[in-house]
Image: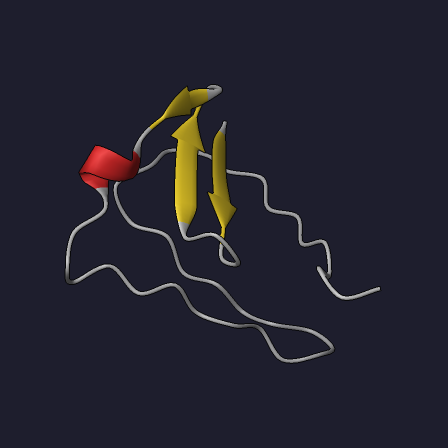
Length: 55
């Protein structure tokens, strides 16, 4: 499982810190409210979820 924390710009893969795999070209993006379309490359399956950080 890949977990991306846009607030802290942290990334973990299966619970292991993966910040070394984040490059200057990495883009921590925001999502607008409502439906969003995400595109993935280089993977055979994925599940996504989003949790608003401001409650």
